[in-house]
Image (tube, rainbow, N blue to C red; front, side, top):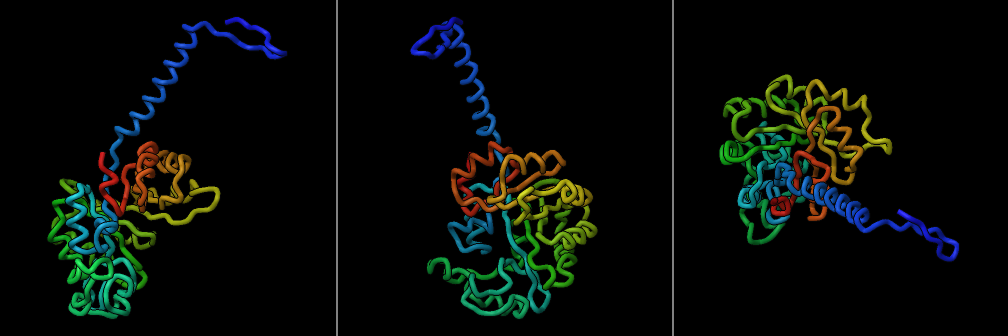
Length: 282
């Protein structure tokens, strides 16, 4: 290296061999980083099936997700007036059917007379609200099931009902496609973990303070939680690193843009939940 002065500035001049070495080192590092995240393949999870292409939480949506190559189906479970488990996201049927009223005010027979497809597109006319048992019988064993227990405060005993159906079908083991249970309600998750300790538990996060999730909160999950699953808008390197440092895995929800996928691969998250499962293909 040598220096020359030009108009009052000191200009550093490097031999070409040194510059070439620096450039080569930089390129190798960049390529290595890019390859690392491109070769990282998170678990592909279809949000309510393939909710970007089909009416959510219906057989049409679940079958579409399978065609798009998902590893897991994400779905929501609530309970009817006659204590039957149904797969629907909202506490009412208003948004996703042609009916009106609260899920808990319908019997299974009544809720299944509703049209759960036409709101999305007329070609899905006749899709119904499936029972949880129907979904398990059709898909469990073919693909993983990521089930969210919705509004457990509205449905006393829902944890026991879900556990009974999983035990009845021998879905509590770790062989083959698995079942994972998640919820925003931590007390609900603790109750479920006591019922079936072998099934992995995920706690959903929607909001955190500006300081992020605290170490105290993460430690409080350690006795029963395997996954800490934040909303995509919360995600940054610091949050994901902290989750991993405390020994948890993470599924991120809900991805609706292709450019978010590469970001999440770079952060090496374990799974991505998307309305568009084809975005997640390697």
